[in-house]
Each structure stands twice: as structure tokens, then as C-alpha cells.
Image (cartoon, rainbow, N blue to C red; front, side, top):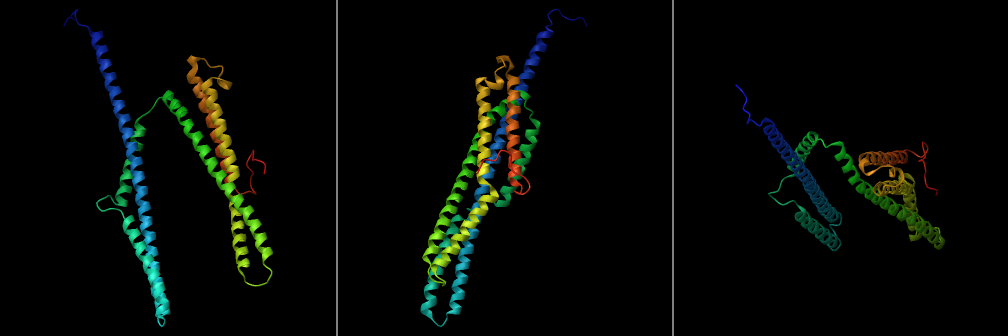
Length: 299
């Protein structure tokens, strides 16, 4: 059959390609929407599961306290059965404790009609598996991954700074406890003038134990060193982010049309800082007689 001159095949092919491209973009948008919704469902299920576990722990603790109070009252009653005036006071106190604990357990108990702990765990496992499968099907381009990484850097910096402040606070608290405890031990020891089992001796033992425990925690966990290295890494990453944004330092030679090369260098340098932080963290977790972290702050 002869082809008609009015047959506009290129135009129809172009329209078909545009239609396919529109459908593909719509499918990708639907996949990203499903991925966001699934991630939200996973986070919501994790929060619900954490609240349910806290409620269960609270109920268990309250019931344990109530049972312990009832058992203590029963034993005390049996031991002091001949003196009602003695066991009645203890029984009343234990009864009040058991009543309050039982009321707390009743209030903290999960409401009826909600999903059980096993159902929430199964739902979370199913959603995580679906999220893992859907995430594997969506492949962002290299440009998108690098852009997303650049946006995530701010969260990494804030996380390092938060951890640094936490370790610094713990270190300062333990150091203050050591200093106050040592001074208090010396003061209480000076007040004890008799070689007897007095409150001074008991206080010395308690304070000495507390100071020894605080010193052991400080020396083992190395809170000051962790704070120092985390803050150092956060400052280095922030310096890289500012240099990339302002186009200075190692990024001063990149033009506007070379943003991808600059972003590649930025990603590489930030990863080097994070890898260095991981190596320092591993060195801090090793015993002190095996290795010493590089660049450790002076005492």
C-alpha cells in the first residue's frame, strides 16, 4: 500500500514519546509518593512500638513493686505476729504502696482494642521489608544522590555537635563529682576523732566509692576525648560546607558550569572527615594499653 502524503509519522512518534515520558514521570512521582508514605508509616509504627514497650515496662515495674510490698507486709506480719502494734504500721504502709503501684499499673496499661505488641512488631517488620524493596526499585541519579548528600551534611554537623555537648556535659559532671567527693572525704575524715563505727566512717566509705566509680567511668569511656574529636569533625565539615557554598579554598577553581565536579570533591572531602572520625572512635573503644588516639587533646 502506498503511503499517504498527509501521513505525519514523525509528529505522531513525537506525541507518543511525549505521552510515554509524561506517563513515566507520573509513575516516578507515584513511586516517590509511595516511598514517602511508607517511610512515614515506618516511623509512626516505630514510635507506637516504643510507647507500647514503655507502657509494658511501666506496668511490669509497678506490679513488681506492688507484689514486693504485699510480700514484705506478709513476711513482717508473720515475724511480728505477737506484736500487733508493730506489724500494723508496716502493713498499712505496704498496703498504701501496693495500692498506689496497682493504680499506676492500671493507668499505664495499654487500652483495649489497640494492636498488641506482637501485632505492632509484625507490622513494623512488614513495612520495613516493603520499604527496603521499594527503595531498591528507585534509583536516583548520581546528581540527585550528591545533592541529597549535600543537604544531609547539615544534619551530620548538628549530630556531631549534639554528641559533643553530651559527652562534655558528662565529663564535666564526673570531674566535678570527683573534686567535690575528694574534698568531702578529706573533710569528713578530719572530723572523725574516734576509732568507732560512726556516721563519719559510713560517709567516707560512700563518698570514696562514688569518687572511685566516677574516676573509673571517666577513664574508661573517655568522654572528654570523644567530645573533642566530635567537635573537631563538626568544625571541619562545617568549614567544607562554607567553602563549597562561597566557592573558596579548594572550590575556588570551579566555574558555575562545573558544579558537579565541585559537588564531587565536596562529597569526597566530607567522607574523608567522617572516616577519620570513625577511626578515632574505634581507637577510643580499644584498651588504653593497645593504642592511643591520634591528635588526643592534652590533659
